Image (cartoon, rainbow, N blue to C red; front, side, top):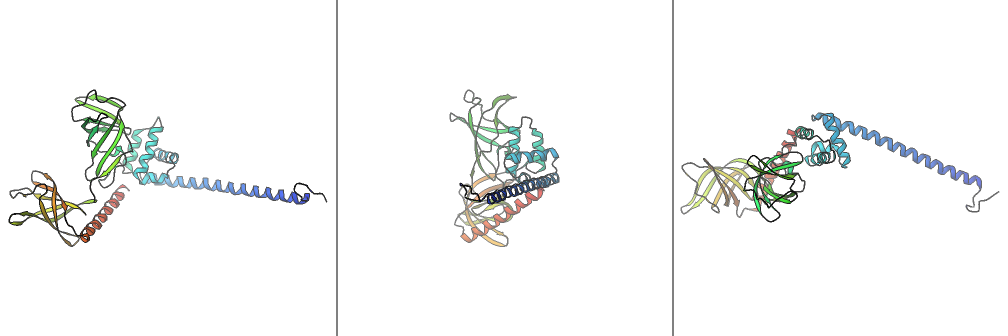
Length: 341
């Protein structure tokens, strides 16, 4: 019987080994083919499910196709664009930036149908596209000069800010990087830097055109989250004769303070910044009697509203309020989601 010197195996045995290896290769290719086919089928089913969900939300076939295609290009789950604003904005921004024939009206239509055209106060801003029209801000120029501006208009690619302060001529030009800082009511302070795209006059206004950005710094203004309420309360003001009491209403509350409004009639409330006050109210059946100091005022024609920062609040009382705020925020978020469906 012959032997191969390099294998030291009979010829018949070598044939069996080759045949065995060939079968393994064929079987492996078969399994790979099945996996590829299964993946194609699953992807088709996933696509059908996505389009069905998109249609149920009122999107057209063209709109659904855009979200599907650009989600896959960005490596994102297409379903997330239907439910979460952050995912949606990232995907449509990719569409607007990379497609020379991108239609802004289609993006606007999708945003409205999915309920992403407005951002409730308890949801942080995703990009500068979320800034509301007529939002005041401060613009800081490269040389340190700053001026007041207002968001006059916006589209899917640019913002148009109008100067409300005198325009700083010869201090700003196209290409300069400028910083915007603004306070969003009941939320936070936002800051972002963008290059100047264009400066032009429109009537008596000086307009500065800048691109949108997702890169915004957010600075929390308060240590505690707060929710809006409308609760009857008593406001005690410390005078030389002791505590004097007034009827009022709590308009918002947090673990650190509250906002109170009282009628501004003949009996005016004798308070000013840093005045010591006492608030008495019931929250979900629990009675509170909390001392605090006035930190801001907002005097209107018939109502005086002011912010109170609690002083020496007990840990148990603060935890009760924090749990209440968290529960109310959850309700607001659930209501917001239901209204979008």
